[in-house]
Image (cartoon, rainbow, N blue to C red):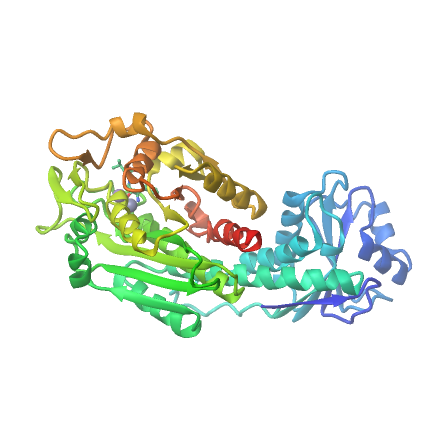
Length: 498
Ligand code: BES
Ligand code: MN
Ligand code: ZN
């Protein structure tokens, strides 16, 4: 999908489809008023007859309305004008996408970003057009063998603005929105792949491919021998139950000066989490292919950042392996030595995420990072606590935590702060090693994060537990691409603050 911006307040462009908004009670949006005048009061009549009450998210397609310049006019309900905010605007855009996809239109002009939306400037309004339409029209690259449904005809969307100044701001927004959509699509594509395709080696190859596509990215993929040389004992312990060899992926993007300390984004890349010897129950075990969503989102965010040429330095670190049971697998009661030197008693092999991440966080120290943010589908307990709406956010740094929280609000990809500290670390005491990898059921998301906290001393560190937000189950099963928007917004803000 291609996006651009145009100046067209009077609805003159002869497009395949013009998308105009109507509030409740026949209250026409800016562009709808123009169409109403062009068509001899047609939209007003539709309201009087009760055919289009303007309910939020409702759509009505008019074909060749006499007098209108477009072959089609799509009416989109915006709900109450007073209540029209960020959420309502997004909903209207999602309905727009679904309705447009059902038409034969090849191109469309969206006039919705001309409306004022509480707390959203022109740039953000335009950004959301590109972001929402692309996200809504995303198709899973499935392996179904039947006749392929035809790809949507819609290939070009123009965002209309009333004047040249607004159009210029909108162009910046569209650029951001399209780049965001690209990063989210990469993240979703990777996470949606079956685990027999998306292996640690495959993820490594995709990272190298990303660096070939975007020469500003330098990528390195370390194999088992190099991981051994780094003494990543916890990471290797998880990997050793599988015939698939582990990979440590390191991608650097230097958009700021060479002396600027980078932000490290660390992703959990378990390409399948069977639980290992502490084997999981069968129900929904297939969803553990999504256990590499942290890796997918940091790679997706990197793609967006490089496309936007953000003036920031970013290092993406992905620890990736399978968690499988076998004669060679790590066992409950095994004690491993982490890269940091601390010893860990593995009481439950299903608490593997923290084992690979503690070594990846230790590895990040060599980049002398300004901040380290790890992203992981770490605990079922986080899903119980927050559901699918908020990612869990834990941090040892107030400023960093607030930045991430605020980025989540701006990007509509929210995170909720949760506690960590000595109280939870107490639960991780072991009689045989420095620390145990599990600490009982109570506060499971917080003990997991507090385990990582023990490896983040003196770093400005934050942890995003995305177990509830990275994918949807049931009939909607598939990756969401979250939290790419949060991560990118966080780095955009950092870039601006410089
Ligand atoms: N990948 C899982 C976490 C998970 C579970 C995410 C369900 C989404 C849905 C993680 O590796 C795991 O198995 N965690 C255990 C930890 C427990 C053994 C302390 C969990 O949450 O049950
Ligand atoms: Mn697990
Ligand atoms: Zn896991």
